[in-house]
Image 1 (tube, helix red, strand yellow):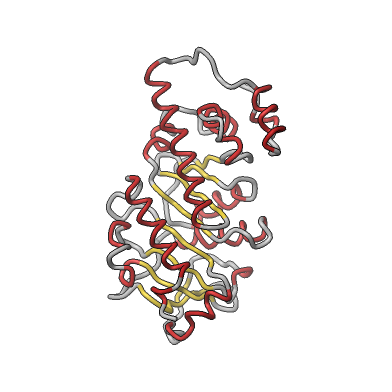
Image 2 (cartoon, rainbow, N blue to C red):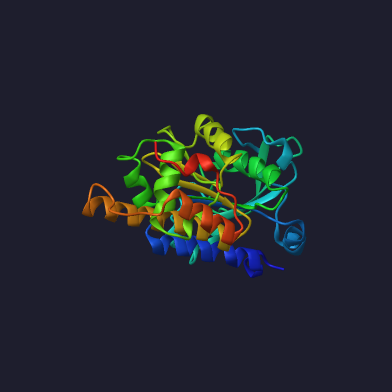
Length: 275
């Protein structure tokens, strides 16, 4: 099978285009990666070139040795992925030590994987182990309202989680573990990758202060839906704070407990109380 005929590739392209349409990917902002299933790799193997040059990842991910990933390209525009996929995205293979990668398809014209590749792969490794292999998608986008909130809310996991949970009843059901917050750091380097991977042991969402959001999920629908839900909650919070400094009413701690019982989710008590 040709790569572009594969269902997972079409899903990847669709998700990227949905993110563009949301307004989360100005210019070359944001990146997306997917850990490809073995049967999916086997189905497209005839269309892959495995003779490429090995290059350093910039991080060591031994648990991902031999894995294949579809990734967006460095400097590539999300708006072009649907029309120019072979130039904008690519498939990479990780070597047996988890230290190097090679391009097996796409990223034509000298393209390279996203500059956030160390963050993506370190977090893929963390989430793969934490989810017993279920999580396969890592998504980073410049979500407008979440970014705005990082200027006015304390950069604290508990406060961000509680404020976002309160904005829409579905939120604690969609992200019951809460969200983590990374203070501003230079993007693309090892430091932000390490800081994010520590949070992702506990959460599926990491907010990068003044930068955007980083989400992990089992598939394209769940990961995009997670990002979309958090950002919509942030949009409601921005509007609430713009209309009135203090809320007149909100969802109470007991309301959250009742919701958790009926929807069979576990909500950490640490997030249910205001400081």
